[in-house]
Image (tube, rainbow, N blue to C red; front, side, top):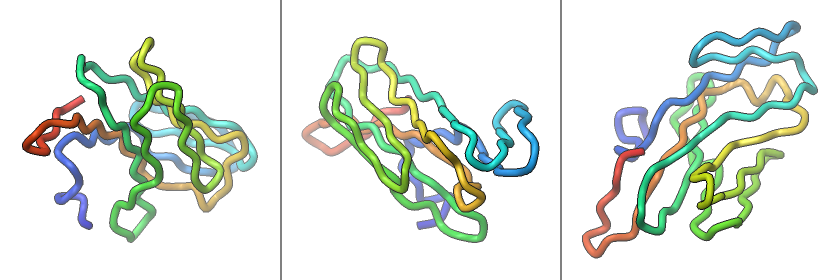
Length: 122
């Protein structure tokens, strides 16, 4: 899957770089190894959504990291976790201890269940 073929609902939220110092600029976060990170994702829809996180490692195509479709359901993969909270309409991605191998671009996406299988943008 190329960046051009990501679901239409994907939003590039942040580029995570693991370095020796911690700084943050808009759209990019640099952290020291073993630091914790939270990447925020909020949505607006009145339908029942499926929320997804994609990750794109350097020189690779994007790949699905995790997805959930029920309120308070927690998804986890590779040490990352995200819980769908329909009350706050959030699906924040968290990891307690990042490693250099976590350096990547992270995307949040929303899919809503419709008869035609259409998707809605965040």
